[in-house]
Structure formats: structure tokens, C-alpha cells
Length: 95
Image 1 (tube, one colour):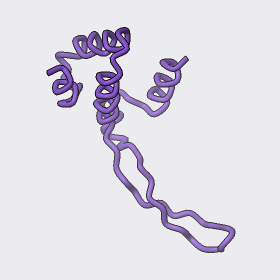
Image 2 (spheres, rainbow, N blue to C red; image 1 turned 30 degrees about the vertical axis):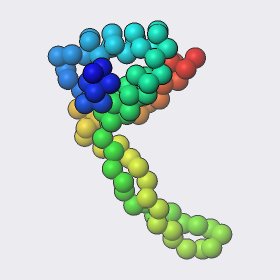
Image 3 (cartoon, rainbow, N blue to C red; image 1 turned 135 degrees about the vertical axis):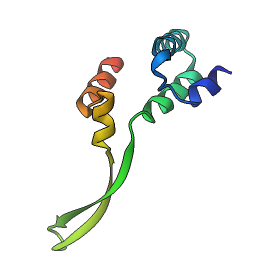
Image 4 (cartoon, rainbow, N blue to C red; image 1 turned 180 degrees about the vertical axis):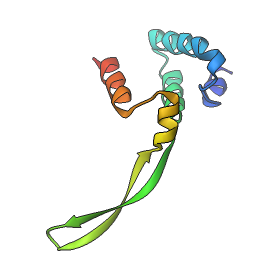
């Protein structure tokens, strides 16, 4: 039941304290399955889209079109999430 709740999403504003407590409890107990579900749910909080990017390849002397996954700035700003904050939070949790 807990895993279904997590998989449903952790973006309910009224339940942030509950989600944080569940996350910390899973972390302390070493519940790898619950932690995996939390990581997927948290990763889905940031909306991303695939956009084409052109770059010049000097070796073959032509423009190459590549696709890059970028976060939608309007969604990230509305949530108060920045890429730097997300990277900093991830780095601090590892150390």
C-alpha cells in the first residue's frame, strides 16, 4: 500500500510533511525498494521535454542535430526548483 501511495506521486502540498517523514523512515530502515520508488517519484516532479539542438562538428565540417532533455523552466520556477539547487541537494545527500 505504501509503495502504491509513493508511485502515485509525492506532489500533494498538504502532505509534504508526511512524505518527508516516510522518506526519512525508509532511509533510516534501509528500505531499498521504498527508496527506489521515492527517487522515481521525486524525479517526476521536474517536468522535462526533448528539444532538438544543432551543433557544428568540426571533424566532419557539418551541422549535427541532436536531441537534449531539458527541464521546462516555467514549471521549475513555479515550484521554486532550480537545477543548481537540485544538484546541490543530491551532492549533499551523498556526502
